[in-house]
Image 1 (cartoon, one colour):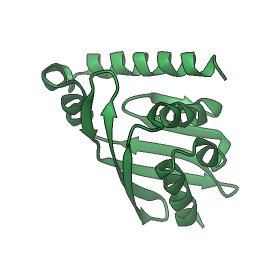
Image 2 (spheres, helix red, strand yellow):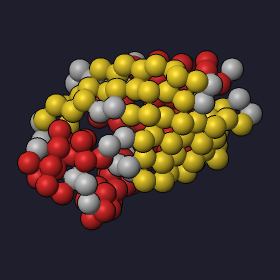
Image 3 (cartoon, helix red, strand yellow):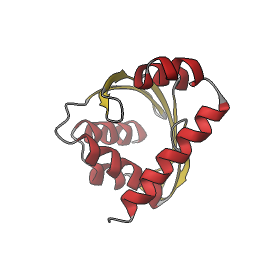
Length: 151
């Protein structure tokens, strides 16, 4: 069952269908990744709503493979809106399930590699630092709060 849930989640993401993704999250879901840090409950679902809304009609491509009953590997290719630079991120996902829904979702990727692609030279210089990670998480969470205020 969990492999099917992972398949449904990323198939919905390929279609930028955030509502279908959100329906697969348990109300008490815990999400974590290098860009947003930790998000809980509706904030995690809203992150996907924001990302899907921001990518509508922008040509994002998402390839994925379910690698086990609790994991997947996915690769989004998209244009980073702040700089107009192409990004090809490589992400490993680990999930836990409760009541047939995703209760824990951890995405892991090389933040330095992402920063080099998204920000160019500046990202190459500072993308590996804790300072950069903290600043990025502050910016992404600010954007999430701003998005949530429109819901």
